[in-house]
Image (cartoon, rainbow, N blue to C red; front, side, top):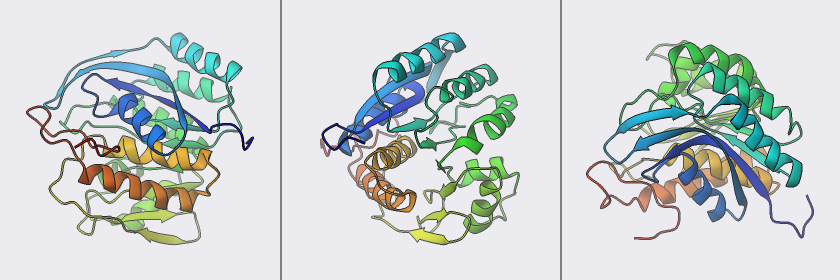
Length: 262
């Protein structure tokens, strides 16, 4: 990357009208890490802090057109993939990735919203595993998502999950620890298992924390950090954002805050 150029990250994800997660969280996280964010929107949600009221998928051709428009004009240093939703969307994103083969890819396998709404249709999970995850530089599931991807039960710990998810083909895995007792992320590159600790804010709102973490990780890859360095840096950003959570906004869990607005 040219030292005089601002690093760039393309977020391929859904829109959260409440501004807490999705591309809104992605762009804030990317900017907070010193990179320029761009988007290819996969779906529009009617969403607030209480729940997801409606979801409308963007057409596959439009998803590809968004990616192509950016790739033809702006050098893309990293890609973050979030909400996919459907098989058709997943296939379109896989096609779009062919337009930017050199960029590292961070995959946040978004399956369920904070409110419990299903954001990935069950029949699209196999497409995610077959078409997207093998292309990931880093995949960042939380523990419930990793159990679904790996097909393992609640008895599987983070180590077992990290090993099982890596078998699916990504170069590196981070099993985020928000659902664990110790709140520790676990990084695995196929050789070393590395625990990543950070500030702990139990009980704080985590709406948008996964989006923030994965987008920050992509931004640090864009800035030239290796995957483990980027995972450590992203954990710091996400932990701080959770600690700054805007719980005063709305009737439900407020969004995390990377800028310390409160």
